[in-house]
Image 1 (spheres, rainbow, N blue to C red):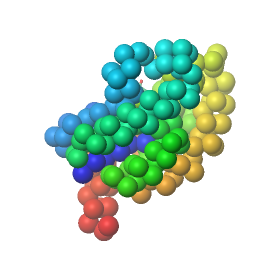
Image 2: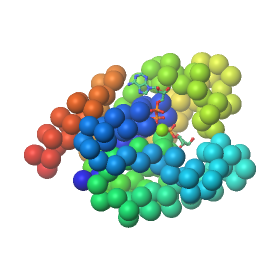
Image 3: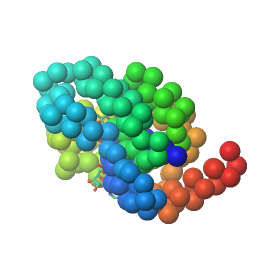
Length: 173
Ligand SMILES: Nc1ncnc2c1ncn2[C@@H]1O[C@H](COP(=O)(O)OP(=O)(O)O)[C@@H](O)[C@H]1O
Ligand SMILES: O=C(O)C1=C[C@@H](OP(=O)(O)O)[C@@H](O)[C@H](O)C1
Ligand SMILES: [Mg+2]
């Protein structure tokens, strides 16, 4: 099975995805890392040099390549992945999607020292500005995220919690 993690920047998709894949003994792919590998440029360089539209096309292409290559994996998407180029439809059709729903104040705590490496959050000089940006972003994205069949609202969603959610879903679906 393909398990896809979606959610806001800072939700923990990359961190949880890696340990979850290890726990299942399946490959882990981080979509941002895949894009960097394919393009031979950092995410920031792609945003600044080529613009967001170019990045979103790279992201959509990389997603399709990953789905074609891996029948079984845990995939950490980027925060915007489900919101562009019919990517959410692809995720819903080809695997099981889990939304990591983390409250904005917790996202601020996690990202306030790391926002500069995330181009969409880079121009946020302090925690208050970061919180405003994250709230605006979530408001625009929530309708995509909420279409995931699975959701984890625990402040820290461990591999064990996810495995229980997936097992319960698989026996009822
Ligand atoms: N469950 C957690 N509790 C506290 N901090 C976390 C948790 N998961 C991730 N983090 C931290 O939050 C930041 C963003 O995590 P990351 O996995 O890169 O999120 P995403 O890929 O969703 O943007 C990192 O500094 C990471 O160490
Ligand atoms: O929210 C977004 O649009 C983005 C989130 C980032 O991934 P993370 O969610 O892993 O930080 C990365 O794909 C890019 O900077 C754009
Ligand atoms: Mg990530």
